[in-house]
Length: 406
Length: 213
Image: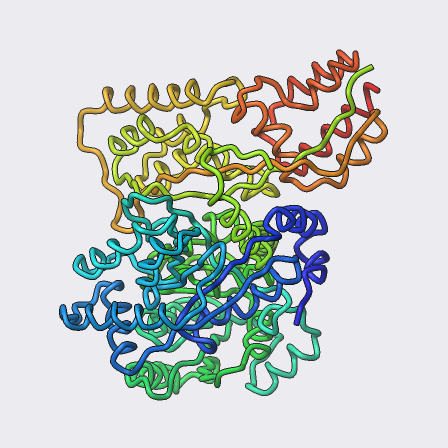
């Protein structure tokens, strides 16, 4: 497990010093995180990394998980889909059951804490306890939504406005609300297997295993096999580029084996690719972090040609490795790439192909984009910035003004 | 004998105002109505987030109008506002309002609407100011500390202090003035920190201090 001082060489010694100064102001407060799962999923993953670092900084951060049965999680899955704009049935009975499960959890849980940090919709109704317990309550929304179903949003809004503040991952998810809204973007951990430095031998080994030639240009997209990531569009892009220059295409990612749509997409991509030995379609098992890291590092250009995207952390991962990235201007991607400064934003197959050709033929410019991209991630999207935002968020609950002298 | 210089740092928490704009008119309405902290955020965010880039991207308003509405002429006018001339946020706000009112009045044909999902989102920031242990009693100590403080600290003393806290002058110029180093203070005061990266600015301040003291 990484310690906070381990981040000084990558994030900067002054960055870590400032975290310590800030944490010293939070010491003495207890922070209880509540979510709905201890393992699996992005929220559990970030809590697993952040809570030990908060503790290392001397902050009393805790973590509890609410309990629910199959029906409860079916309802919350529907809520999740409705926040993405899908027309899914959620009845009044379902909502009553949802609230009831929250109340039963509240009765069983030890909520004694200075700050209650509630993650995502599943435990949102715990805030009913605020009237009795007092304390500070924050709702942290990790879900990416731009077009929620109004009935579900209205239901959630009734709870969100009882909190002292709400936290969203990108500006597009913000809505008019009567409580303060804070922007806290996700982050990558530079010391994790997916992002740590790798030796040339490690990178070579992974490429050799798949038959990828490091002596020729490699264009890569790392993503789930999902229509929204447009892997078929990526193959079209590659074909347009290939008419004029030699390159290889790597499409790598995972996906749930029980997801029929994912398997259909994978089949379609494989059919598209089968006649071309320079296209590598790699369906990776879970825990392939080092493999993904190596593939990103071996790439000449990294793509993220999504049609729709949450935050799109694969962009941050590639930029951190100083790669020139061409990505769609959707979801949180424009936050990570300032067009022509730290990467390229595109909106079409043709535009993406045009920019791949440019970057492969102008390696000096491509390198500058990569260098700028890495600095942008260092300053804004490392886990140390995430920790800083959380510490500032906790402190902000105790002040009213916009300029706060500590 | 002047007081020693106490270095501070500042850290920002970004807030979302839940307000968006899809046209120049909506951008203008927003600029008129949002809190001063929001104007400050949108005119200084790139400086903080892209402190290594040169040339730096312009302010958020200009970047959006050029990039999302395709109005390069309006974007250029918004980008060229000489922020260093303004000592109060509301004066800076008034300049953006003036430009947008002029362009709206001058053009009668239809105005573009941005694509769905590319709206301008108004944000704001809360600023936390924290004293650092570092204290300089003379120019030598000042140089030593300036070389190693974070860009957040440098940013605070040069930008935040002058415009956000409306002190009218950057903290370094004020301190050297109080020590009687008038020429250096004047040189520091003349700097245009908006057209240089923060690391470039650090180097330039170090160069000036070495030259005059």
